[in-house]
Length: 440
Image (tube, rainbow, N blue to C red; front, side, top):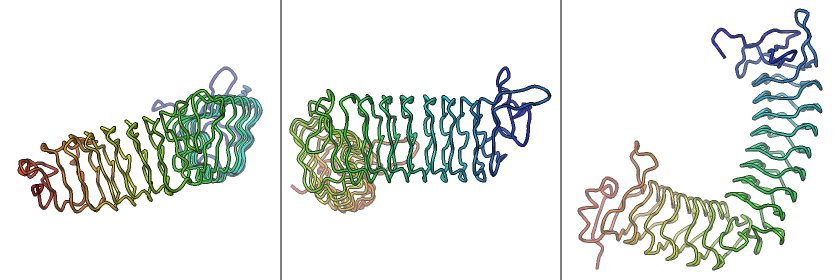
């Protein structure tokens, strides 16, 4: 807004309006800024308003018009309205219910963001688009029915709707966006209709009461971390006619079983990854706190970022010869890990790869390793490190502006005899209290 431009054109009965076209106005606020707090109590928006002898039709609620009005308890929206703009009711914590009239075609991004008192909302069939984060952080919203006029559930539309127990996704929807239902901790079941073709990254992540889910035939694209940290998820099922995906023992795979996409967090005990698998997806096992042992076959050539993040009961791990690089955070927070064997073909260990693996007390780094990411073994209680690399592995930094560390504890380091001085002079490796030659 220009410095001298008014946020509104006129005010009638305590409501501020901005002229947006021939005979049309949008509801705005007094200063045109977030948290203007121009409104409180019960507000009735008229369908028409007169000012200086001119009649105007109210067709929009403007960007952040009611944002931050925590004392707003109810709002009556007229049938003349067609559009609710971005953040219109952001932070209206006293708002408990909303009826959107049949005529509104679009609900903008973050419209009801952080409306923590909102219990119910009626969305009419006239709505064709619900924006990103539209109901994000509506922690008391228990149920919602999405009309069959909507074709996409956008980015984080229902993120952190902690009381949401059920949701009806109509068969008009073809895409479920990134984090669409993430952190809906009370969600116990969801039916994905046979119209959905694409499901975005982390769409149902941290839905801790979700126990099972069926992937329909229509889905041809699933992004990483779909069910990350769904702690009660026992099985993921896939329609047998799906051309892109399949399941085996409740585990989600690509159709050819070369990619392991998601492992249900509630599965427990030991698990042997099939020999057909060449890739373990990002976040595939993340949050599987009941997994005690996993066998990674030599067929696997790629382990994705955070693939086993937070597998707290995993006690031992053998990185197979087929792996040449271990991705960032791949085994971070595996707090029960006490035995780690890294194959002699690994050349790179990523950033934070084994950070917070507090059960590790000793470590052998093979001579093949050329690069190790910062914080790779941070917050690990490793008292003794053996690094067989003749040339001290280079430290990969996430940000070159800051100094980086691989280890928290730097007690004793064993290196090749001919490399002792090179390690002592190194910026990172030289910080160990003792640097000694590997005994023959």
